[in-house]
Image: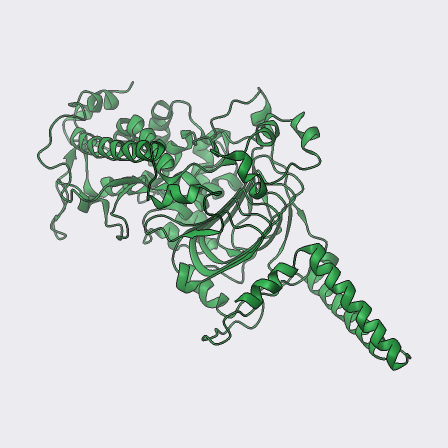
Length: 571
């Protein structure tokens, strides 16, 4: 244990009375879930078994090489002993989950990321939480009843499970995302355990008093906003310092006086303990009887399938959609984050500008997302088609899925994946370019064909793995054959509403795909002309037309696309 940690640990216990633990008693502390959900990388060299012992010297090395308290990819690669590609990935991942939209890394153009770099304090917090172990997906309380909306076992499951323990776990259990309450409790417990270390890495000794007395400036304290935030349901998140009794209402023209690290530690621990108590009571109440909590109501697929939870805090949850079509527009989701969970044999359109998006546990479904400005994560899916324009995409533990991507950063592929395919973006809707501009997705940059495969085993999960498995690399994705590439047409459900300016796919197609598309179009026109000009009597032409209609109808039923037509008629 370091002297800094000793100093904080010797402070009064968290339960010590505080006359003003929070200026706004109705505002509750929450973990910043996006840091834990989208900010973890399965790179072994970033996972420190003893973060405080390892990161203290790493922080010093980074600080020695920093310029204006920022470090670029070259310094990160050198100090952490990782490749340049991985150092760039660290910066891109950190930039996608930073709490401050004004940070230069968030605003940097792709060609500026390496040189702009990261604030040293944000980078240290990012590296620290790489030690976080995610909560295991839970088994649904009525797993037999939800079999219809869970990915079915693939034909090759038996073979694969003999090769890797991951498939065995997946094929033998029905895995569901933990509820928001469970996740928050787990993340707060992690922060509670590690808070002393985290604060010591941000604190500085008082000038002239050595390491015996650590203080935290308001600027350093704000960086804790990477991990926690205060806010009521439905309210905007304010600067972290405004929730404190020691920095709130500070004169903006006068630098706030630094606060003893022990005081910050005690105050945060009190708030975390209070929040954990509240969450525990809420979870306990739900286990003992019915609850009106939206998050847990939505976790029950069987009770009310095909529901959309209009959560006022956290992401909009779309869960249990089965054998139907669902459409959501910007008026429903603008600026929100979305989770699509346990959907089966459906087509889902989320045509809106989004911040974050997660697709979890879906099968035999096509999901069209508008523009995702921060990050999209697709995990534990089978036979899913995802069409998205996004800044960043991460694919984890998926099988037989196809991704049609307009993506500004290299797609990240991690975990236990099999038979994945990637292709260029293949659709548009009238407000697409407007939505892309709103969230910062560039149509001139598309790295769909440059996937970056990392570890086959996620060091952040709570499963144990045999020796050597952790060093295996994830299976990458193959490119869709250009001759098999087709455009995806989004129906115009709302023809009476104002239309946007997008008339075509904003991402230019690679030459091979464009040439294949032109060949297919030419073949189609020739076939249509041949049928039209066929030297047949009128009754034979009618028979041919009738036969084509029958075959087309058979295809509609066999492919399941007939449901989309019924849904369109219903709308």
